[in-house]
Length: 96
Image (tube, rainbow, N blue to C red; front, side):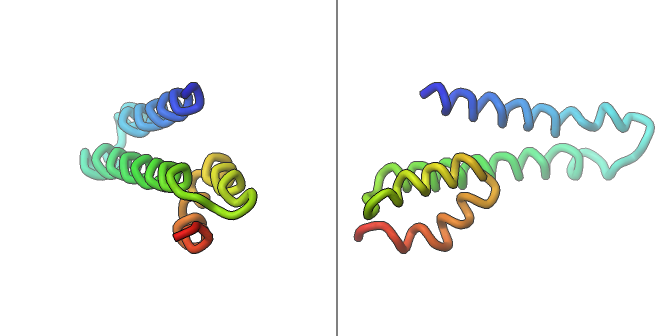
């Protein structure tokens, strides 16, 4: 449970930085509200949802040997590419 809290806190901080980064460019026009706020927030939400989906899918299903632990480690250690690898390769390894 503590790791989930740390994960949520770290991505909340990332989201806050992305939302408020426009303040650093106050003298420049960097593309408006849509590019500076909406797209980064939408990307963070999409990333968080897909990461959680992969993590929950791994926890709910059975794997052979140590594959479950390995996939949990991969998705947790390399979040950006871990869930992509899991959806491409790992879902084929679970018991039906």
